Image (tube, rainbow, N blue to C red; front, top):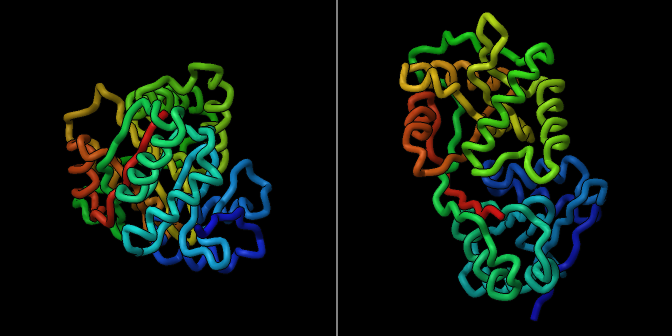
Length: 283
């Protein structure tokens, strides 16, 4: 049986060629490659299959993220089995995320061989992957701007509220307070946190550039103060944020749970179109 192997900087050109086949879907792994994962300077590993000339990839770190090209089911299954042999002996990831068919197939295979992979907290099988290259909303005059450290306390509280609502767990729980606060601080200090603050300095809307690679920005952490929902503010705010981000990128992407009908409708009205479907397994 063909084996998988750890990829290194010697595989950089091959890895980037595989990622370039679908820049939107592969944005996370591409950003990790830019961050030095092939140099092993970040705490994660990229595996390739087959070992002699890889056609499929698996990023294994905090997120388990498969990158598969078009292939028949038997090749897909062989690659997943090989990845399981090299990376599926125990679970250290907090989620599996990627194109829905591959991510769910990988989860099923890993869960069948390793009990810890079968202990997922939630599976979100249908998450539209969306992209905007222009804003089509008729109203973009919401006062969105970069959040500053002067507003950090309110921004951090909004981020915690968003994460708890979206993921279903408090990011401050289990000793995660310092790490999540540092993550939020990094977003603000690097100019990747966009939002609206009221006259008192309270952040009432936020949208973060969680990933930026190859001219594509992935928006994460979108949140509107619950007290302001249902007033027609979401589309203008998201449109203004998208317009700001497009000033420095040629495309803005995101993925969203299909059951969040209000959010999907907001993104479509902003100018996003559906480009694929993701799935996420949460632990």
